[in-house]
Amino acid sequence: MSNGDNRPVEEVENSEEEEGEEEEEEDENEEDYCTACLEFMSERRHPPSCAHEYCVRCFYLLISRRTNCLICNVPIYDIKRVFRDLRSRVNIEANKRPS
Image (cartoon, rainbow, N blue to C red; front, side, top):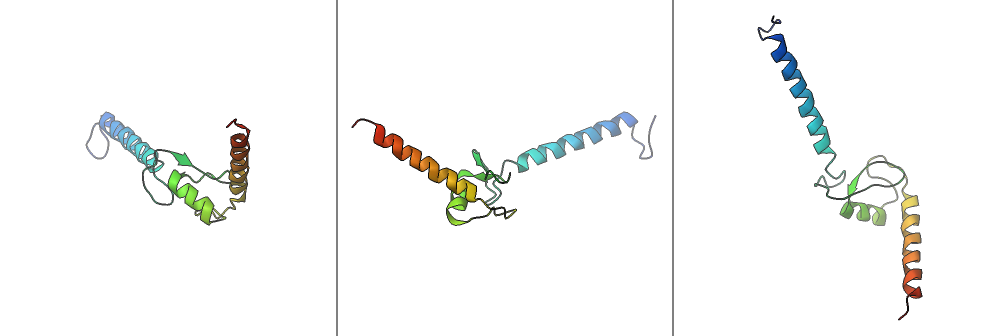
């Protein structure tokens, strides 16, 4: 049995499956790169207000210099508050330690 391009049906089905697998791999690979610098991300961070992922370096640059996500422009004020609170907790814990 064959189809219009003179290849057996089984061969056509297998090639379509392989194409789908390749597309999935490409999608997965795209997720491994930072939204801002497009470098490979070994560690990921994202603002709690959106799901755009950044490498650690770009994430800290983002929260120190901007108030919105670079991609969707959603405010990231919440994350600044989180870091301010975290810094306060670290300072409090450091002061509790015996010298």
